[in-house]
Amino acid sequence: METKKEKSKFSKVLSAFGGYWRDLGIALKEGDIWVKLSTIFMGAGYIARKQIIKGIIVMIIEVLFILMCIFFAAPYLSKFGTLGTVRREQVFDPVTMQSSTNDYDNSFLILLNSIIALFVIFIFVLFWIRNIKSSYEIEKASKTKGMHVNTFREDLKELVGANFHLTLLSLPVLGVVLMNILPILVLIAIAFTNYDQQHMPPSDLFTWVGFSNFAKLFTNTITSSFSYAFGKVLSWTLIWAFLATFTTFFGGILFAKLVNSKLTKFPKFWRTCFIIAIAVPQFVTLLLVRNFFGDSGIVNSICSSVGITSFLKSIGLVREHLNYIPFLTDPHWAKFMIVIINIWVGIPYQMLIATGVLMNIPTDQIESAKIDGATDMQAFWHITMPYILFIQGPALITDFVKNINNFNVIYLLTQDVYVTGDQALANANAKEVDLLVTWLFRLTNENYNYKMASVIGIFVFVICAVFTIISFTRMISGDKEEVYQ
Image (cartoon, rainbow, N blue to C red):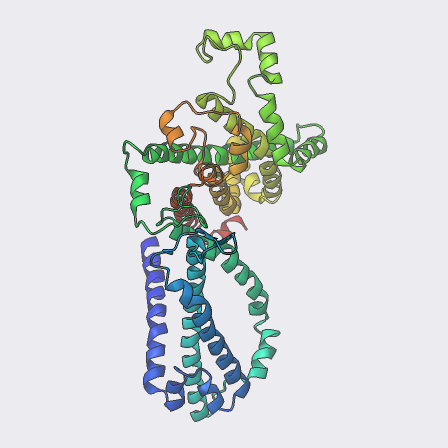
């Protein structure tokens, strides 16, 4: 059944895509001279049908686009294939006894501005197609009785009336384009270059290298251990995301059940404690915890004085030559402590969400189940949990994706504390406790290896996108509202 639905959706998308180009072909084929002329002089179709203001605005946009192509797009796009050939040099003038800088190429500016220019061209092509279709619609309206096409004034009225939602969405969409879409396009482009510390603009140039960076991520060589590091970091990232998501999720539910239980005394006090824990900034909490669990921290002092350190040595969990527990300096201990500390940090927030959900569970279903002989545990697993998963399904997926990119917990707990003993990881500027996102951060901010960071960034995006799409279509698809009403 699901497969048929998915095929139906896919066929609708293909049909809409085909219809888009079919309508353009019909407009070009059946349109009159003014429609055909509007392919060159945009606005001609409007002016011919006495929609002068629309025609003038469209023609101004066309003129601005042409000027943009001449003075902005052309100079950068002409160098886009090489990303520049002239290096930055200091030229000494013996006459003036001064040094001057030559007219050099900046590879990053060429890349960035070329992508912006290509994106503007793409948007303009869509606008050009819409202009042709609209001119054809006006032509048909002039020949067909009862068919009406809005004037410029009517369009303005609709933008503050029936189509006011489009007006409200214009700024957010612009923000998404500037802050999300364009940076992602630049990220993808950099992944196909050799942009690193040895090729750093403006003092040096970088150029296209094709898929060599991607090959480096999957091929171990004598000079590169990125493949080994990627496998290690990716596996830990997925394990961490799973543990961090489900421990806090189920822990929050259990604590919510506990706090809201009739047997629990002073429930308001316990809720207040959890709210206070949320109110403290996370970076403050994590930095304090890092100091507490340091090799010379207060926790190690207490463990040593009460004999816990000696006991852990006797059972082989702490090496004999150590006089402390390596909470954040041993790879196994560090991973365990990161998960435990995240539980402490994440449960209060999940508990408050679960409390709100539990308060809205249909009590008649639980009462009916108990009348039929169900125990409290059976009612919890067969009624309460399915309801919580139905309500919090999207949030659970979001939390998993967020934990894949959970920079704060990993970085703040291990930065300047954890030192890797794995030389292969160190050669790739990675650590055993790194997530893909913290590895990416180290590559850019500490090692200026932008090319490999971009490749990793693409894989982070793909992993998050694939998991989100699959989870939303499988986990919360269908209409289940009536089950809980």
